[in-house]
Image 1 (cartoon, rainbow, N blue to C red):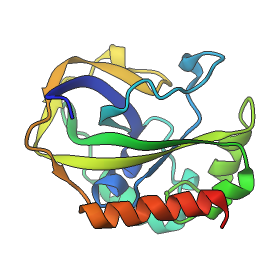
Image 2 (cartoon, rainbow, N blue to C red; image 1 turned 90 degrees about the vertical axis):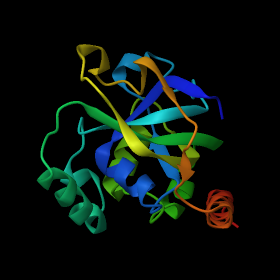
Image 3 (tube, rainbow, N blue to C red; image 1 turned 180 degrees about the vertical axis):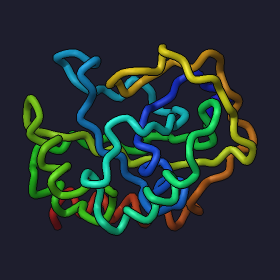
Length: 189
């Protein structure tokens, strides 16, 4: 892990909350319209998670996640963007088999309809990132900026944020078990 990182990955706030709780270790991604015709690419293997409400809708997630969304929305808006989660990409899977994605049900918060819609957007396929998530005990708060707006995955932060002191959300054994289970589900064995 580098001593500091300036890169952030925009993700629904409800998914960030699930990652923070150890409820999931998987991020599904198709890519935003600002990512061009090539679509999403894993530009950085380590990054801060940038929670956003952009495109986040109740009907896009599974009903079991609705209380988590309600809890987050009840907190209301705060001034600035709080960054306290750091992710390390352990594996990247470009999933071209919709049946393999169906086997990942329960490993992420997206609804079945969302998975299907995103899978078929532009060209069939989705990326499944297995991430190890770490928490910063004292969140960094940065000012919101038009620079962060839009349908894009990657944003450069105004300055690098230090990584020493990060604590893993899941212990090594639990994370490794979840990583292996995802591999098995994707392989269909």
